[in-house]
Length: 200
Image 1 (spheres, one colour):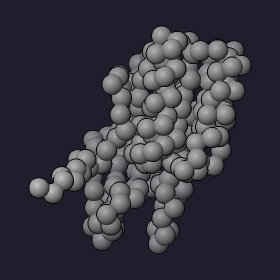
Image 2 (tube, one colour):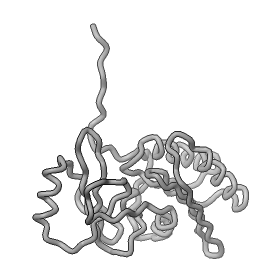
Image 3 (cartoon, one colour):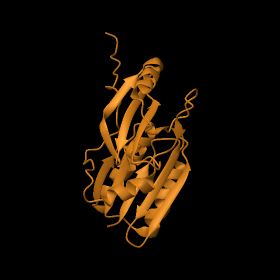
């Protein structure tokens, strides 16, 4: 089965095309204000390989703009070519040589998220902490499980920088036992959307 994977949730964008004969992987610095490289690479791969049988897109958490662009492109291709569409948490496809790891990330508003990934599955959900609370939480874990982040965090010497990979997403998309997320797919939100009401 041919699988096209799209990943734009962090500062490194990636695309991957897998089938039994061909493996194409493209990575580039992801400028969240300019998605030109994403669409150039996507157009090149689809022109060369044709429509896939399955599309899988990384859902974050991370750059809402990047994830929304990837989802929109995936929906467009899926509808035009009548192919299957799935989503999966980007953090479960981080390119790290470990079956079990913790991910921390900047959740904005002076907070961080913490999540655990085991065998490329999200364990539990996303917990939000202040910096002090997170340092206390990590100190209490007493574990040698790797701690990774796709954000450039200062003052966290124990955190390794790694990025989600479309290559890994494509591999997960080829696994018939993997529970992928069905449409409608949307970015992973760490908080409820904030709505500003107009003044009366």
